[in-house]
Length: 177
Image (cartoon, rainbow, N blue to C red; front, side, top):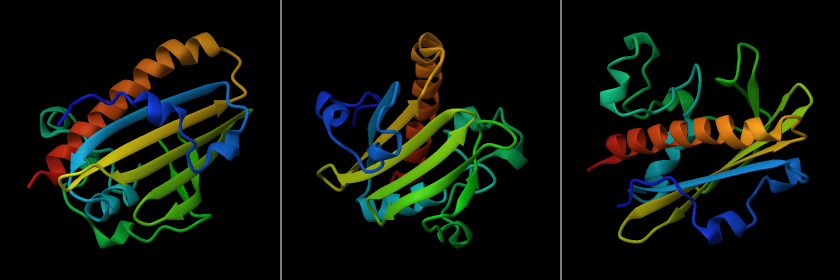
């Protein structure tokens, strides 16, 4: 199983649920990775993801440097599995940053929307079977309008790639048989 979070050309070129939320996006970041287990087993982990929820899944080697109270859950908790369109969840983008659930279709699609000042944001997560009991997780972040596109395309891209790589490694660890 590849450890990359690079989306394929086909994934980057495919339409995703939520693309219409920021239709004229200045920046689009696609990440994708494969984890063990069918979409039905991966879905609860995606559903409970987030700040002041189950956390942001990182591998144990990284989490040991994080205070225990801030570490992500290592199991599925029914408390976080009830999410519907219109629900608002906190985000790591700042004290008042939130995401609102825009679309949800278990166990395959979760789309969030947000407004960060003048920038509209959509974050789509799609799960699809990847053969041999595995799941392909495809994440797309769309932003617009963006004033400093060079900053998003450099620092933003690097930060997104690193955080999604951590998420991928943490999910693989949690889902390993």
